[in-house]
Structures are given as structure tokens and as C-alpha cells.
Length: 467
Image (tube, rainbow, N blue to C red):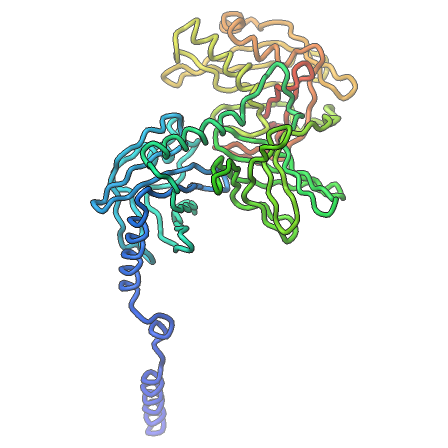
């Protein structure tokens, strides 16, 4: 028993000795307490923000895995006021709001404490902002290097980087700059739906020692986002998302992508407008390797074997959000036109297109095109139309035979005719498999596919299948 007590006493004594020798790792790594470091960060950031009489300019990527970037111009004052403009929407007028620099969990944080529409528009839902909730009004200070200040929006991993504006008159030049980048972004998506083709592809081409790698860029104009796809020499396809910002770099019009595109050992992020090119083209040069973004005509695919469609029910639903494969001209001349027809007949917003189901019958009978409309209370109205499928030379043809006999079918036929016209064009539709379904709001494991009109190749639908 005495031996046991002696042994326990020895262990306790050893523990005391070891603890007395233990190094304070906090003091070894940092010379001061975290709270003191954060206080110093606050003063450092305040000094930087107030050092520029003509303010700062920069790009905010709220979530570069889903959406692109927005240009901001900000002028900070000692009385904790900040004037802000941005190019997120067409209204670029300056707002005057409050800010503060506060103690965050691990670093100083820049917080916009009262609402500016340039901030709140980004983080609203639906028509007020991006398709879902991104971004915030609180930014963790990362650091400063050569006048460039970096922040991180912790909740959504947003990236916000600003640098001195270079303006001589902030109030006029900031708004003019936002107007110009907004107009450039809008012009980038302008399409003549009478002459355009979804095969006039936007291509990011990387040329390295005579070898070119092409990334086909499907651009989502609502969310400022590229869906980039490429195929290697073995026929293996890969896709990745790239946030897009139309901005200025060293006074030159530019496209900035985030995250940067990694090709081999090179990283491409900033593409400068080539004003000497015979077409709109943005160019980046890294370590002697050139990458460019421009419109390039590529040959149309031959399409898939439509007899091997991945399901018998094809669905498109507005509630799933956008996808770059859904062509802007299909949205404009088919979906939007149906809503225009409904507004003219029943009054603005009384009824609107919601979704459609195409129940496919490849045995010669009617395929049922079921179109669903939604009223102001969320109530649904269904209208059914018969289109007969025929397959020739890997092309799908639909012949429109008219409405079924339901009470809504003939009643809504004239208003919904654009969708029947799309499916029943005389030259048919080219079908392509598009992997699993991905919308900006919802994504599913269901197989996705696209139908492109051969009568007007600017029109391409995108949806998913049920078995």
C-alpha cells in the first residue's frame, strides 16, 4: 500500500514539474494577445480606408462557385459615413450610408451598418438580387499589400478586393465608371435572335507553344457566370464554373474571372480588351502563354441517338432557376413571349408561365405537351397539346395536331403557341445529353438534356427527365 501511495505521489510531482516547464505556445507564436492584435488591425484598416481622398474601387465576388462579381466604388469619411456606387443594377446613383470597423472573431471586420441598395440588392431574393441569398454586409479584413486591401465574407466565402480609385472627382467619376461597366456587361449578352446560333460559341482559348485548348463558355447573364467545358485528346470532358466581372484593370476594359482558370502551371484571371482585334476579344498573357475570350463559330454536334433518351417525361420549371444551356433567345422569344401574350389578354401578372412537362410517345401517338400557368395566388392551370414525334436521321420532329379536349386547352392555345411552334419547327430539333440537371436554384441527379431548333438555332431548351 505504501508503495502505491509513493508511486502516485511521484506521478503528481512529475506532473507539477512538467507543467512548470511547459511553454506558453500563444506567447511563442504571437507577441501580444489576440484582442490587442485585432485592435491594431482596426486602427490599421481605418488608416488605410481614410488615406484615399478619392476613395477605393474593387470587385466583390459574393460566391464565385455560383455567381460572378460586381464593381464597387467607395469613399470613406472619418465620421463613419461612406458613399457607395456599384454596377449591379442600372441605377448607379451614389448612396450615403454608415459603416464601422469592429472586432470580429479573429480579425477586424468592415461592416456596413445601415442599408445601401448597392449592398442590399445583392443579398435579396428573387427579382431583387441573385437567384438565391449570397453575400453579406460584413467583411473580415485579410490584409493590405501595395495599396490593395483584401476582405473575406465569411458566411459565403465571398471575396472583396479594393484598391485606390485613381479618380480626381469621386462623385462624378465613380458613377461614370459604374455606368460604363454596367453597359459593357449588358452589351456582352446582346443577341440578334434572328441570326444568332447557340453554336456561335463563346470560347476561352489557351494557346501554348502552338497547342490550343478550347473551353466552351456558356454564359449565365443573370448571375454573371461562365459554365466552362473542355474535352481532352482522349475524349474526356470536364466542366467548371467561373464567376465573371466586367471591370477596369490599369485603366483598361477587362474581364476578371474567379476562381482563376488553371491550365498546366499557368493561372489566368485578368483578360484585357484587345481594342485592335477585328472582333470583341479579351486577352491574358501569362509566362508567354496566351489565353483569349471571344465568339468563335464551331460546327454543330451531330446529336445523340434520340431513340435512347434517358427518360419518357421531359421537364422544364422556372422555379429551378437558370442554366447557361437554356439559350437567351429561347427565354426571350418563347418563354417571355408567352408571358407577354398572357399579360395582354388577362392583365399584367394575372397569369404567368410556370413549367411544362413533355410526355413523350415514340410509338406514333400523341406526345402530350402539358403547360402549367400560375396565378397571383400560386394556383395552377394546366393546358394540354398533342404533338406527334417522328425521328429521322438522328433528328426529332414533332407535328402539332392541336389542343386536347380539356377546358383550358383551346382556351389558352393562342397565348401558349410560341412553345408549340418551338417543338414543331419543320426542320426538327437536335437533342444532346447534358449530364445531370443543374439549375442556379435547384440541381437534381436526373439526367438533363437540351433540344436545339434547326429552324432557328438561337433557340435551345434545357430540362431534365423522369423515367
